[in-house]
Length: 312
Image 1 (cartoon, one colour):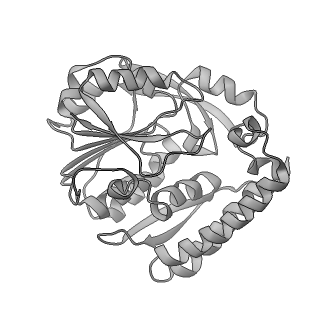
Image 2 (spheres, helix red, strand yellow):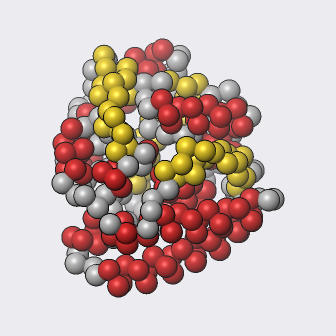
Image 3 (cartoon, one colour):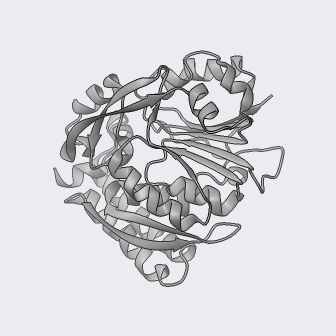
């Protein structure tokens, strides 16, 4: 398949040819390596650019799917964070999003009416390996951080990052769902795209160029818990920031207005419009008393938007 991995769903939908994709991605790789040099700390200023280059080469040829790990250190606007990642396409992508592009630097990406320096309680749905939680801990200095991750392979790395963070994270090894019980996840070594939504998995299977199909692994069944149960179990009465990246399960979590939403002040949410009815999620947010904060720069067409909502 080779270079085809570089061509996104959005490229295909808009008819962007491979030549343009290769020029764009090669230039982007150079920028990412320079950004990694600037954002990393200490010895990581040597290794982080190298791994950004390897991420590009993996997407352009043989995808990285190594479970071996390495340690890196990155700056945030407040203090540095030490993290552990696997040497694979998934962890390198999330590292790029969280520590290089700083997706969760709220004051940079959204037109907020306030400066946010500290967030006392943060809940992270879709914790993956804990990179977002590591950024939240270093940047916003929460007293309580609860991260929820159902996939055992991700949890193993997440626990390493919890130990590195300096904060005693609460870790829930489960999936958040509309009903408690169990959930079956479609799994691949492109770990950030594991999903419990059959429609999402089925649509991705129709696209053989996607890494989920190349790196497929056996499905897993995991415990499922509702948001009300989750917050009650961990004694959380108020949430300053709820982060949600659950690969289509947001349609179930935000299917209707629920009592737990009264406890939440802000929600940063990736809406997978390609796979689910994102507008119904947004309608629930409005009905629950949240308003969307405009982004400083709109997401490009064809990409899943990461949206911020605050209590009206």
